[in-house]
Image (cartoon, rainbow, N blue to C red; front, top):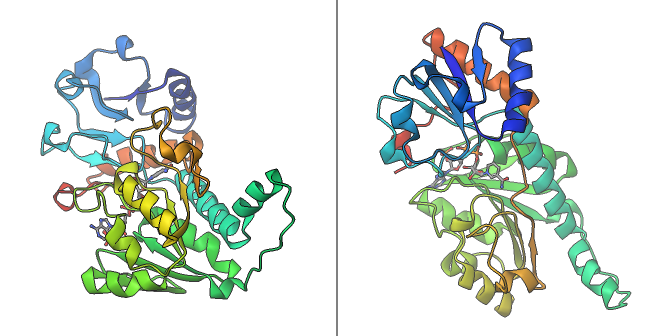
Length: 308
Ligand code: NDP
């Protein structure tokens, strides 16, 4: 009844020590060659290799080491095998920090000042009370709600759009197609925290940008494939968008000479908005294995029907 952590060995050793301390009853391995494949009941992976699931034929649960599951070929996973994404406080905290920092940088025009300093320009830009800056989230899930909770005390005007109806304290929530049309025109900053699905792929496109207030800014922390790159370049050229902060691109990294690298209105970070933190992620996986053994629903269990 072993959990095999099939990813970076250095982190695997870290996980092993935490498992030994916190759940000695769960056998843990991070060296795939050190265990017979049929003994593996729980498998934790970032990017599953081709044929991996055939090799581990006695699996009871497949754990994603990340919050997203778009890296999995869902058609390749037997239907009866539960797939569980990573829902743990460390990822949520990291994302909340990244989004809050990005909103603050935009609010206080820091990215303008970086360029102006290099050009030896001393020019004050007016900023307004936070209550006048409208920050809208595409997606109102675990990570968006963590970012919202961190931003709320600053007093920004917060809103979110999601598939299903939501009630989040201090946030105007929208859903459905009509909801999207009402949501977009009131976003001075649009934060994308969607999962990548066929429905959300390419959603950040020219038609969507045209519904934002002129001069709005974009923060994309979802996936690079949410964005139609040429449409972003066009929207920045016309001033429909003023800036974009992109943590994710397609591909990663972008190729040499890609226009995003040198675009003065685009700020890139190397898919670092958030990472799974072993200290808290281990507790989440232990809790889920115990839930599974007790016949309870696991936290982060992926509803595959809602992803197609
Ligand atoms: P959740 O599943 O908790 O939240 C996703 C949200 O998106 C939900 O509110 C969901 O709506 C909404 N949504 C999904 N599809 C649609 C749709 N078609 N139309 C409208 N709303 C939709 O995910 P998390 O918050 O945990 O993670 C979000 C994503 O963040 C991950 O999938 C991953 O891609 C990305 N990520 C990026 C990282 C980075 O470092 N850049 C790190 C970790 C994650 P509803 O609630 O109604 O279902």
